[in-house]
Length: 252
Ligand code: SF4
Image (cartoon, rainbow, N blue to C red):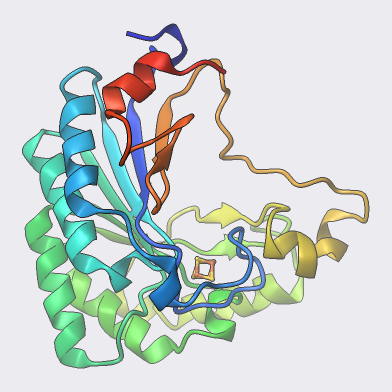
């Protein structure tokens, strides 16, 4: 359809930029209050998934934020649609803290399980746990595992997983707290110089380090479509233009 998107295989939705965290490594910068952040429109997102999947062999759909589980209905609608369309990998990246209420945590976990999420990545590390209490996160993780949702711990490492800086030491101690739950450890990710990380952790990147993201797409070979909460995607906006038209008219 468009030469620059011939390898398109993944859709990512930043459901909201609102967050329960205020992490010093956050690529989004300082948090935005939920009342101002907004969320992606679920029906527009689901319609886009249907249209794109009708044309491209999409193999994975991911939701993240901010904290996506502040909007569980939107997250679940997206993954339910992806499951119905046969998308194989349906991922959520969450910090696991959207409520301290046992009942609410149970309710959201049941909805996630029913929606067909099959790869739940839980961000737990020194950065997240500087502001996010571990108790509700562990309860969420345990509930998700018991509900049969495949879940992995996904820590952010500073410099590298093996570097012995104070943040990594703290992260290892936090991960140990999850051992009794038997939740597997994923590879996580390495903090990159962007947003707050560049502001607060510059000493670890070097004074002259420029902003950089390993997730940036090659503009001439777009493999992932990334949707913002305000509907922005590629060079267009989901709420104003049909997604297939946005794809068709895209130029780097
Ligand atoms: S890193 Fe994640 S959990 Fe932390 S403030 Fe940013 S979006 Fe929120």
